[in-house]
Image 1: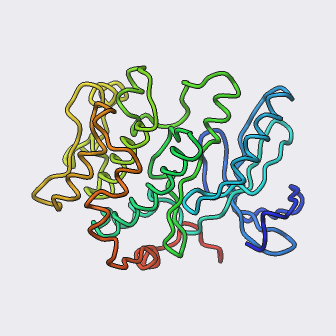
Image 2: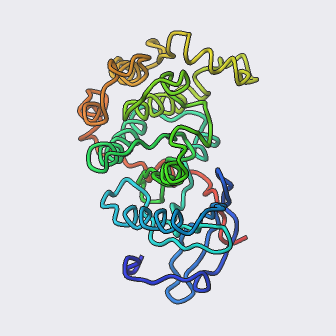
Length: 298
């Protein structure tokens, strides 16, 4: 976008095109800036909060805005009106990994390696430079654009809102990808994001959520799922269907003991990532072959 960094946004400058998503706490709209035509995603979050907390949130979101990582969705601006915080975010025009797996069912290893590498770079930035835990890595929070870039979204927002309201450990969102230590109420760290990433990547590879079998179309009940994550052995990639490198990557991510899990930095140099690093695999080819999630001509 043309120097979006320097633009002052007001709500009036943005023309709403259509609703493109409903997330935790609010809706996401595709908007266009009236003056220069750039598209953004506008996320609204209902907040009934005191002025001091609001200022703190806006301040923290400004820090997000300064994000210098090409694998984290940029928040260009935020404003507050009538109990709603609105975030002006970079628009990722090919939707999320959730949109992609609805269409292709499974993603092949070379493409998964490229997805992993980009998400891991985003996690290295969050974990090692910003010292934050994302807390909600799932397919719908990993966004893709037509260039084949993958970026992490919803970073910070839920954490900022939770911490500012003094509820660091309450959770908004899905429990499906939550690490066992979080479900059982133990302390947790950056490695909880690695568990979530491992489950997401395994799901993309096998074509269904790892805790449900293909035959068993209906998902587990809430309590069955929590019990499975905490008490059962972790899921794994079937060795007869996947390369040893991929199986090893999944196993290094989905370890029930967080100390046994590799960090984002360690996983970046894992043989699975290295195997495809020089192969010039272009994710844009995969996303270009699919229907975009939002049809602008409608």
